[in-house]
Image: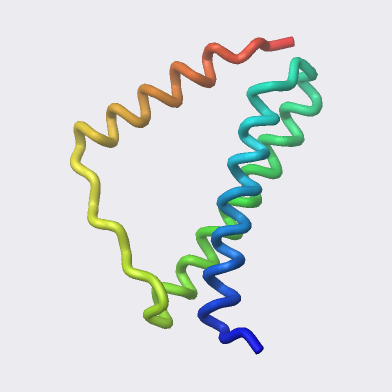
Length: 90
């Protein structure tokens, strides 16, 4: 029988990979309706990851990441803004 910690870790990993697969599909589709649905699923996936991670942190099963500096945050933000703006808007 798996422990609660092992189940939580497995679920976090599954959500991570599912989210990445959905993002890849989002970037790959030319159908705007499908893209919008995928974006909604990615959003829900992120909320699920956040809730599960909060539980893991509360229980001591995970350690929080160190805070990122402003330059790193700006770099990542700009990277995603450029990537999203490059998506076709069919």
